[in-house]
Image (cartoon, rainbow, N blue to C red; front, side, top):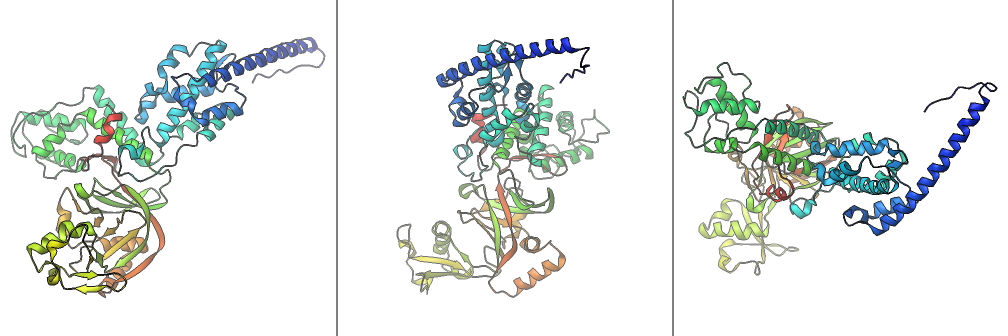
Length: 539
């Protein structure tokens, strides 16, 4: 604000003039605000069809509470906060959103108009844009459950009333608008990669590979040069002493292996059919994949916890995170395509050593009974017992059951597998709160962890090293704690134990993410959940 320094006598007349001018300006300003408020009230009640956001109670109540006084303009034009919002909308692409969704074209047409009517209409446009953008960038532009019925996490909706109140109170809202998108490192890293991949697209992207043989070290082929160029673009070929050579050398082999590791392919250094198909995914498709996963981050709770477990389903990996850093990781097996693992969260509060497995009815009907029919000794070989009744359960001899008579309607039995080395749950079971009977557990089928694609379970998560996981959940993963866990397991007794502190767990479906060393990773859409989001994201 400009300050006037005056002498009490010498500047008496100029002071009077300043006072009169200020009084006149205040009267004019008051009149302008009264007229604009009346006009805004009428226009808001009429509610132009092109501004559906004005139907929202948060917006209408906000204006009513402030007696329809304008938020974004005064008689001189747009306020600083209006420019703050306009800048954010201009850069909405950085968040994987489309600026055109937030009335950008209308702003371009009428931004400089300062008449009373234009200012009122612009005020409503800016409020509508803030409401739409705020909700889209905070909790997603789409309803999570409408597009992914297996998504069961909730990010509480934006408190639009508080946001509007803050906007009215402050002269600058740049900082507040910056806080609306997810602040998670995973989201921010994808945002950075989105910019990088768009730069690649502007440069023309990469060429597609046509049909060709399996390319491997030592081969000379015309496609080798194209492969070099392709892997240089994505940063996989970091050292290339012979960039013009059409022979597949060891540096190129190492680059292919880096590419394969980042894309969940078999890491053999050869460009076979699967690697070739992956290389042929266009940069536009990768951009859309990044945007889809940024949307999933917007569906996530804003606070994950200081310490939590995250299972990245398409990466087939479990992590324990502490203060934003990974302290443990291990391979996992997820549900198969027809018994897919849902996207859920809960609290791990309980573990069970040497667990029994009470087998779900669906698995009994679809898997266990057909195997018993093919092999009458199947149940006994797997230490599976059949019971009738619950309160006073009675074990039944499998040979006495007419299995052909058992179906969904006629099913008077329940099946349980005893603890031991053959138990499908392994030696440790980790229970967390959720309504889908999903939990983590070990497995006797250790060889399956050698597979690249590991979608074999009936919906639960199998972990490769349950002993190590138990040691981390009970303490800090020390060698001594692992030995204590092993000693308890070797007793062979079914035993439950409460964790000292319940820890949050998130089972998440990412198909694009950035790992801790900053490398971009992509995975196949194993459950077909990305395809449902294609309708709202073009490239």
